[in-house]
Length: 350
Image (tube, rainbow, N blue to C red; front, side, top):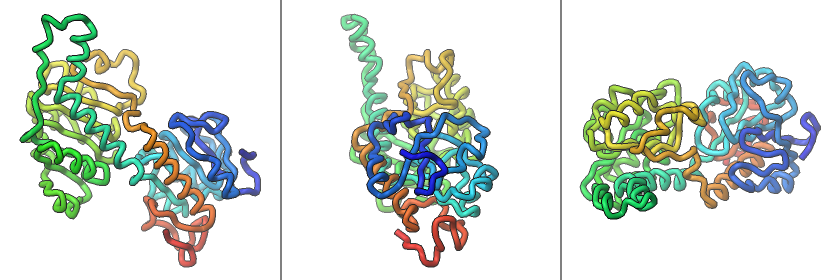
């Protein structure tokens, strides 16, 4: 660790995921890699929006574990900042285009999260289709004799799984699901045509996803345009026997509309790893329903998740500290010709 503002290349870790000694909610993320590369790090104090510029003035890079916002107006007041590195794939609260115009790289770890997040979606799919929670409750409450046969699973062969968002996670989930004998359809705002063709997945509009799917799996990125894309109208078009699974961001779903549909059994159930807001309020009625499986935005946090995401994010920080452009840059196209870390013309592009 070091004192922010020192001459050494310094990384600030956000306190929404890191403790003062550098251990994190994800476990040991390998900060010794930074130390071995001559990079100093410090866990910042807990900050809330609007973040005062002076609190970030001494850092060359910020390693963000949660959802700390980085508005462009703030970054303009941080001439030393070169890099915002997200631990994970989501970047809500960060404007990559705007930061790129200010010469600040924004990186995520898409390849490292792809497998664990897709597997968390598969976990929900299997648990819901086999009525796992209901059967657990029957056993745990001693209702074996009277309730044992009332919660039979629906089976998956021949069912339709609709994926909303067909990027890295969505396409990886599709590959896993296809092995179960289901039909997969998908909707993606950014294309996804090549990968869909490779897998034999039909790309369709949102209405067809809602109407035809037995399971809707949401993996899209949260942006201003995608906020509440799963709204009352979408949910109202779903089959009464259908399930909704979200492993992306809570803001993609109108949570009130979902609650009402679950409460009134207009859809069969849901599996949610994400919420709006997070954490949900203790009196949120969604928490009281018996046809929803909930997880605290942590279902993908496995040992391999921490290992692979840590390796990816540390590599990107080390690259930028040496004037190299790392692989997973969100705003490569909008960076200035001379960014704050190096001249792009002479920089090594990974």
